[in-house]
Length: 337
Image (cartoon, rainbow, N blue to C red; front, side, top):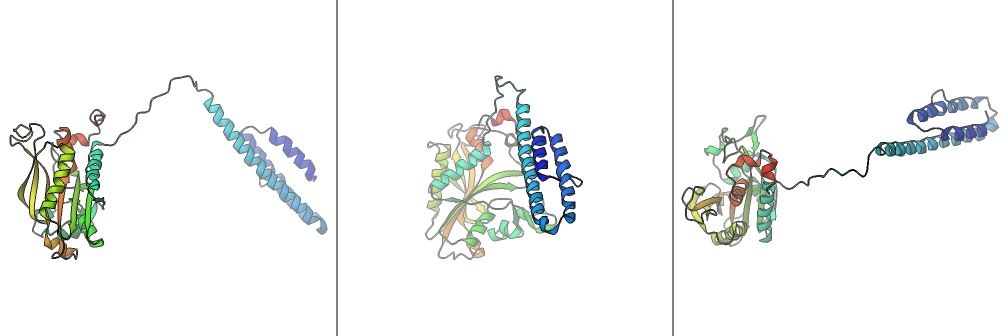
């Protein structure tokens, strides 16, 4: 076979190929199992030995050219096909407006809370939502007989009895204090889980922000100062604060923190139960037993911790009376933020 004649024939035929079907027909004709290139290769054994190298080179050259032509034609057909699909569209028609998305109100409030503490020198750390029983309870000085450790108060994992869905973000406090040395100033945002019946003020899944500071000489007055800056930044400079004695296993002394009602300005209304105060978070000085569990010298270091529900803060900030609104994905509600 005259390879030069074949090359001329290929150039003519490829110029007439203008569809995927005709290109496939062209490929099979020359590169298929029974194609022309296979026939050329089978004739090598009948050629004189001294002519075989030259002929083999010509066959390889022909094959490479065929592959190159097919690849180029495939690209050309693809571009042409896309252009044909676009042609029916009238570019003069008005476009369809794309609505811009926005952050969920809980995400906005979480970011705002973390931003306030970051400006005061805290770093943001996140942790796993599936936790060990030790980090969620034991390391935080929560005894075995504590009600929160019962199965009806915590989501334990069936196949891993020592693992659970964390019931607060405080386990990250244990993780950080085990892996880092003081001084520490950390806030921890994240989802938490408790088997509560869903109503206007409870959900089986909600969000918390935990915060803690550990160093030499940390005092309760430092906690009060930090939380006052936070509360007045997020709720306004005119609010008042009070600390009420409370009990938490992981802090001693412990306190609940209230702010004057942002609706009635402390005079008493239906929102604050006629008391004039709204509870926003729990706090206290880190218990020495917690420091023992993480091998921090409680005689040298002291620290404070606090925790708040993001939904609670958002509901107070925006005057929302039902926690379920955050999770129903009603755009009429979400577009307000």
